[in-house]
Image (cartoon, rainbow, N blue to C red; front, side, top):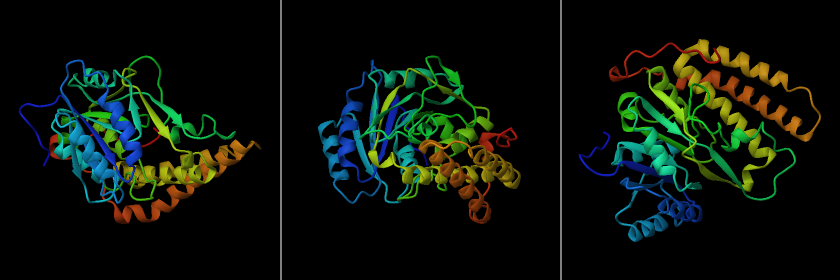
Length: 326
């Protein structure tokens, strides 16, 4: 059951964290320095059963800011489970998610709240600028940046449709989105060392199919730390593979076998298109796109047996028909 209050904060900023105390400290400091412009808001830190001093650090932030910060613990490991726990506990009609290594601009809170004041807009997100840690390799070009959550659609507000949705490091929803379309899928999202992702993409697809609007707003910009461990060929290939599996799950849930077959054709064609080029970047991109296709293909054998199709609840209405890559 999702918690509601007759009065309280306008915006609940939810930060999910696990075993990242140093990063959490810096990020929360930045969040607590945002300009609220008179808007009441809360910072809800959801610790995902950390085994280091992350929970202790979160409690210290709570003690130092009792009027603003709350801390809770979710024992089930996984980002979707942790986000869903935050949704249930949050007090605001607007629920905004920031990563525990994200640094919002001063006007971020106002930018998110202003756009989601429109009852027709169910989800919004803004630009994500990278804070790269360590020296950048020569192979890192624009083809890889989306997999590091680097995202900027320009200076104007834009409507968004599949498969270009706000990034999970900087995304917010009206509470009504969860009440009508459900919570984040437990079959998607990071869990332990698995890089499975796309839980926010799948939820946005539910919203879009249900007639809700999703927008990009340049007024809600953040900076996002990119750890040096993610700027390696090995990590990048794993990340591309995880994307393939995640997309296969979405295609199955929303379009069944027809969606999976269409996805297979597209990812195979994409892998074949990268055959040319002899640079280090070209070689890595070729490996990565092949990993995407291979992971998608392997998922076709087990996902239909393990994961149920999406069936909207009655309050969501009849969803629009959908096939990927139409």
